[in-house]
Amino acid sequence: MKPRTIRRSGLGAEGRRVKVSFVRPNLGDWRSHDAMEPLAFAVLKGVTPPDVQCELWDERLEAIPAQLDCDLVALTLETYTARRGYQLAQQFRAQGLKVVAGGYHPTFLPQEALQYVDAVVCGDAEEVWPQLLVDASQGRMQTIYRQSAAVSMQGLHYDRTVFSGKGYGHVSPLQFSRGCRFACDFCSIHAFYGRSLTCRPVVEVVAEVARLRTRWVFVVDDNLFVGPAETLALLEALRGRGIRWGCQISLDVASNPTLLQAMADSGCVAVLIGFESLDATNLTQMRKKWNNKHPYGEAIQRFHDHGILVYGSFIFGYDQDTPDVFARTLEFALESQLFLVNFSALTPTPATELYARMERENRLIYPRWWLDPAYGYGDAVYRPRHMTAQQLTDGCRWARSQFYRYSNILRRVIVPPLGCTSLSHRFVSLLGNYTSRRALDQKLGRPLGASSLLPTLVQPSLT
Image (cartoon, rainbow, N blue to C red):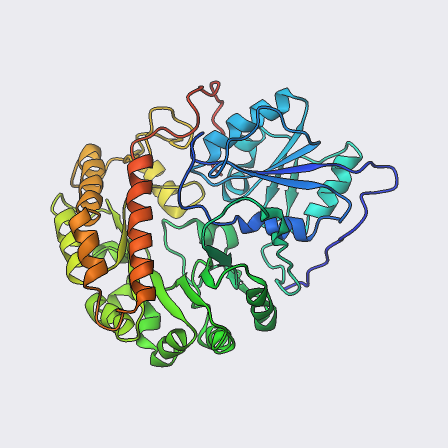
């Protein structure tokens, strides 16, 4: 792994200082209720020269002004926000502003993004951002900047002053590592990072925790269980810091009593686990067969025994699923006392093995669903094996509506799992259920982007 070599000052003697507007698009031009601070912009702010003025506009919290007072607009785009981001980019460029886009989606489809923006950053951006600013100030910005995945996180500075006055919620995001040990066929993480897996020094993470504005923390790593030694070192350092935290973690941690106890001792109150399916063949097909080694009910109980609530994520639509999968999975989620669930229709995203397979099998209904005005959030975008696409869409919505019925929410808050009965647990459960129900009511079935249509695209290849 090569060390990070980042230029932190100076835009070049011949260049002029530029003002940068960081923009985080929403799914569409509406406000959301579950927004956390976008750490990508804290990283960029941390490597921006101090005399370069920066501002942040987060469309989840506020409307984006019709006119921006800046020289350079920096967008971060996910696949779900690509359509809205491209619409904003068109608006900004019409004003004569330069626009750069980074994030997963432009990394996977740079040629698509370049139809709407002036430059694309592929990969994480902190290593190339200072040079991009120099180039922008001198009027010679390149079209593509690439950062290696194998860049050390040591010394990475998250400058959260860019979030000042924005009114984010009570939970602060925190990052320890990048990448994941596994390579599920549906997941963008492996496509983005490959086999690269990097961690920040524990002492730097602990120092950042001390500076956070709240004692409620969500570790945004795609899988906090990067390895027993690394994860245990972090957990031991967090013990006694007075924080209450949650994370995403793989199911195999349930078989490690030392890590489970360390999680509880350090203040962990909730974890998100990708169970994905109750069917062993589906798990093998999605390249997640290690889940078969850990009986779900026993694993959940171990977390509950340590005072840790479990948020379960499930994907419907793999090749073994039939229309009865929704009721069976809902029953499991309720009986297992999961405090939150994510019931999702399988959605192939660019650069994943799943997308390539669906494309080969000619099963995609919306080949570029993220740009298609006919697509609504949560809709099935391909043809399942043993049900119709409409059955998949409707089944997911039914399962969500049943899990988030007010009577079920009340039951989870009043009668939580044994070991998870504190006021902190009840607060997390109530807030999480309320936010999830509200967000689903707002987003499901809604087209991506604003009401204005994008022009016809010459669809680029995904390769």
